[in-house]
Length: 426
Ligand SMILES: Cc1cc2nc3c(=O)[nH]c(=O)nc-3n(C[C@H](O)[C@H](O)[C@H](O)COP(=O)(O)OP(=O)(O)OC[C@H]3O[C@@H](n4cnc5c(N)ncnc54)[C@H](O)[C@@H]3O)c2cc1C
Image (cartoon, rainbow, N blue to C red; front, top):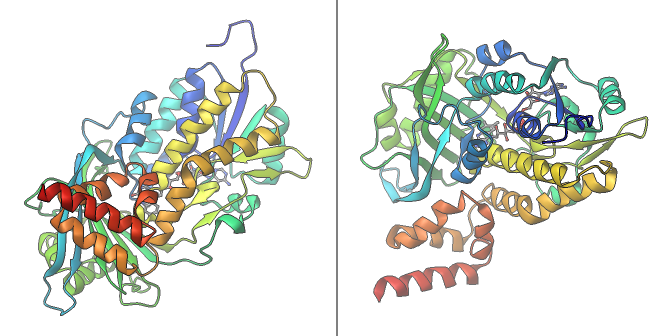
């Protein structure tokens, strides 16, 4: 806490999402004066379309807990593991490969339509100022003149393009998947513990599904499951163009499962959408942007979360990254004491995050957007026989830096498989 007779340091954040609200609440707890400017009211968010599948693994959940922002933890279903399947290529509708492995600690998904309005209320309760405006350059100038530090945490909003793409860190140049989400009720459980069940359909795309907590349409909550479809562009799963109504969206979802993943269809056939807004379809170009925006006045703005680091959701890391980035920025701001938040500090703050963590997440996530090389097929197959390999892959989702040890080079993959095979045989 800062002393009462010293003016608290002032920070403005554009965007009331996963990153902006976490950082804002964390700074308020340390005595900072924080304003968040966002373009959607809690009511807009609550009554709007779903935005994400927002599955969060334990290390990021722990950051939410530490900041006192886990208010749905007791009600939200717990996901205890990762399941992985590949269908048989002969069209028999069976699984050529299946394994599941426990996470060291559970993960959870709380619908952002529920979470963000709740956190906005909590931000105000802690003394933060929430303003509603669709921020452009003029508003950024006003904020930068008024506050010691301005952060741009506008997610996928148009404004983040001002930061400009960092080509050297963005090897993928176009959307690699057609994405769709269906929030549903009525799914039958599997006969093993709750998992993020990930299905890889070679050449077609991916489907993963897991439990979550959503709104009940009034002011309460209900459990649901989130279906995530990742179709290779131009392929048979890139088929959402005609799904205009909620009924059509559900029909397309179930048709994909029936065609490619009959075991998933079997447990989903009686599903209904949670509500008419429990669906989206779209595309994302994975992009790393420049961390610092220079305004016409010369003042600087620092990007945070998806604004600077947007990944395809194929590995479910975006909210996890945004959470870890908010924590990293929080620590960097607190450690900066009374010094000015100049451009050098901004660049250093982002580069430390990127080099120490995010670069490896980006690399692994992007690798999954391309057809799996031979050694990855071998690795995924070995996980069926070797529980320790399955466990290692599953727990990599908690902190994807571990994949650098065995994912990219065939010799590293072989070393892991051989070591675990020897341990099992001993
Ligand atoms: C289909 C899909 C599935 C996903 N699934 C997962 C998953 O399972 N796990 C996971 O970890 N991540 C997932 N993600 C990614 C995750 O949702 C994002 O990475 C995360 O929400 C980013 O947080 P953020 O705070 O940076 O941005 P956001 O949460 O998007 O917040 C941005 C905020 O900025 C506001 N804003 C935008 N423009 C302006 C403006 N001009 N002025 C004022 N305010 C503005 C918005 O209203 C919003 O409040 C998924 C994404 C998609 C698209």
